Image 1 (cartoon, each protein chain N blue to C red):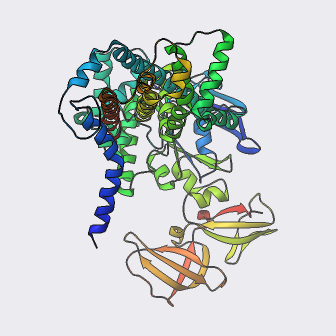
Image 2 (image 1 turned 30 degrees about the vertical axis):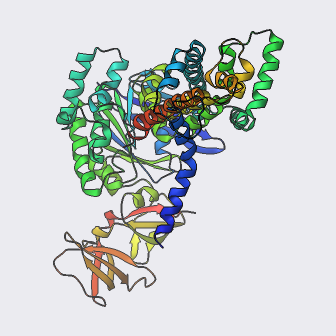
Length: 255
Length: 343
C-alpha cells in the first residue's frame, strides 16, 4: 500500500498546478481560442500583448504601485514595531491591536471606505490613491512580521551600540535594520506579491491609469482570448521570481 | 585610561521593590573590583547604574570627579562587556571591535588598525574577517572584551562575563582578564556570583545581599575576617556553632571564647580547614563519612560534646579516616568568627 500516499500527493499537486499549467500551455496557442486542441507552440500572443501600449503601461503601473506601496508599508511597519518593542508606551496593547486590526477588514470595505474619504476630500483618483490603499492593507502585515522578529538579541546589541557611543539614529541604521534584514525583506516581498495581485482596491481607487489586474479585468469583459493566458503567464512569472528572490535572499542566509 | 568611581547614597526602586539600599562605594583608579552576591542581590542593577542604563532613584555616581548620575551610556567614559556578549552578528570581528571608534568619528584605516591591534591582544588577529557566529563561546567573549576596550574607557564594566563558559575555560579566562587589566590599567568592575572567580581575580571584593553591601575588602580579608554571617557563608563553606553570650564570654558547646560586642544568641563560624590544632578544644568526634579530594580529605564528624551538630572538617590528605573512627579535634580560637544569630 506504499503507492497510495504517492498517489494522493500526485493528485494534490495536479489539483493545484493543472489550472496554472493549462493557462501557461494555452498562452502558446496558435489559434484565437484558448481551448483544446492545442495547436501551438506560438509566441503570437506574447508578441501582441507586449506591443499593446495599454497593457505594458498597466504592467509598469503595477510594478510602481507594488514596490512603492511596499516600501512605504514596510518603513512605517518597522518604525511602529521598533517604537512598540523598545519603549513602554501608555496604551501599547491598544495601539498594537489597532495596527493589526485592518487585517480582519475585507479589501472591499477598505477600498469603499477610502473611496468615500478620498472623494469627500476632493482628491483625484490615481495610482497614488491605489498605492495608499495598498499601504493600508500591507502595513498591518509588515508590522506583525517585523514586530514578531524583534527579540532580546537585537535589544542587547542595540544596548551595546549605545554604550559604545552610537546615537539613536546610528543604532537603528547600523544595528537594528541590518539585524532585522531578513524580516524586513520578507515583509517587503510579501507586500509586493499581495499588492501585485490585488484587484478590488486598485479597481475602486484608480481612474485613468490602472494597474494590471484592473486592465485584465476590462479585457475579460470582451471574452476569452489567448492574450489573457499570455498576460496571466507573465504575471505568474513575476510572482514566481519574487518568491524565488525571497527564498534566495532571505531564507537561504539563515545560519 | 582610567578613573576613580564614587557611588554615594544610591537607592533604587523597581516599582515597590527596593533593589539598591544606601550604597556607598569608592573605587580607586585602576582597581579591579568584583561585585559578588547571589542572583537578585542587586549587583547587576548596580552595574547598570554605573553604565548609565538605569538612572538611580536617589544618590550620585561620580566617575573621574565628574557627576555622571544622569548622563546616558553613550556619553559616559564607561563601556560594558555584556553577559551574552551582544556582538553585532552582521559585522566582521574587525568592524565589531572598531564600532566604538567609528562612532567617535575615527577614519576607516585608523580604526581598523586599532581594532586589529586589540584583536591581537586577545589572540584573535588571524580571525579579524570572520563573523561572530563562526567563533566559539570563549572567542566571542574575547571579541566583546576587545570591543569594549577599543574606545579606551576609564571604567570597564563586566556583567558575569565568564558565566557562559565551561569551568576550565573560565579559570583560564580569569587569569587572562586579570593580565589584560594590569596591562591596560583601566578600572574594572566585574559582577559575578562565583566566589572562587571573585577571589581569583579581584583586588577587592564587594559582597552584596538583598540590595545592600554586606562586606568589602581584599579577598583574604573577606574570607578570613568577614563582616557578617552572610559574607562568611557566601565566601565558602563554614561550620556554624550555636553559642550564647554570657557574663564570662561566648559560651559554645566546646568551651568559652572571649567577649564580643554582640549579645544573646550568636553563631560562631569555623572554616573546615581550620581544625589545625590549638587551644579551642572540640574533643573527640566520630567520623560519619569521609572522602579524598586530592589536596585534602573532607569528613563529616559528630563531636561528642555536641551530638546534634555535624561538622565539616578538612584533614591532611595522608590518611582517609573510616566511618566510625574517632578523631581528636581542636582549633585556634582566633580562627573562629562570632556573629549575631539571624532572626
